Length: 281
Ligand SMILES: N[C@H](CCC[C@H](N)C(=O)O)C(=O)O
Image (cartoon, rainbow, N blue to C red; front, top):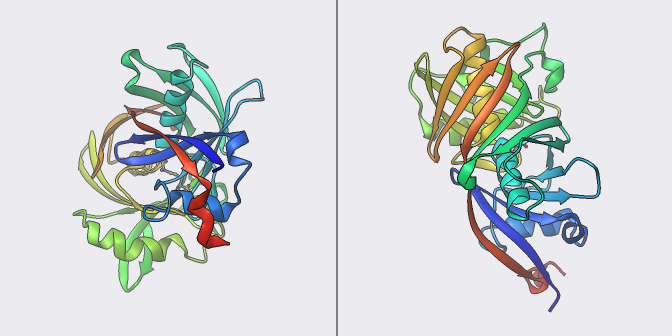
């Protein structure tokens, strides 16, 4: 049987498969969706494709529904760890290119904590993109599914709709997340976070990801949610983001430049068998 090698990692329970571009080139987007399926495939919150024939390492981020993301925070920490594991990098900081811009990564001692400078949070609707009036949508009314919400729009390179709530309710994330993801005002859809501000250094979030659905953690969502709360003046320059999968440390500098630090663990090296696609014809 024709087999292909994948490397499985997770960041706070947000798991990704990593493969070389030569492996990814063998599959259609339908087959990549099947590979990410948790019952009929290997199972994953997405696929990271390693492109190693350019001066700076480049990673493509494919969601389980086959859509391509401009950026992924947990994905970038995982990709940085993968590059360390294959000895493409050491403990020195290094650049990585993504569809949503260039970032700087660092694998700290022990390789279980990864730091990524995620770039600048942007609040202009065109950055997402979003079809809304004005220079920014900050804590503005958004009625979804009969619920009166307060929403802030942020781009981390990928789009985010951040909903501030008094008390986090994960059932509401599941109920309203898919409705917000696909609102007509988001021509490329959007990631969604519900955020409870605990104090000026701590927030809790629930996540509904574009193209992936409910996930236990999200790096770009953590950056977006913390940026939105900082823009609203509700948190300071260092924020711990708590998610069902665990915590990330977010630090701001300059004009909403966002630094993210958090864990990565390797799970397995997996050989996929082509028979996985047999029923797809
Ligand atoms: N589904 C997201 C990409 C992955 C984001 C998340 N896994 C992260 O860690 O940032 C999107 O379409 O923008």
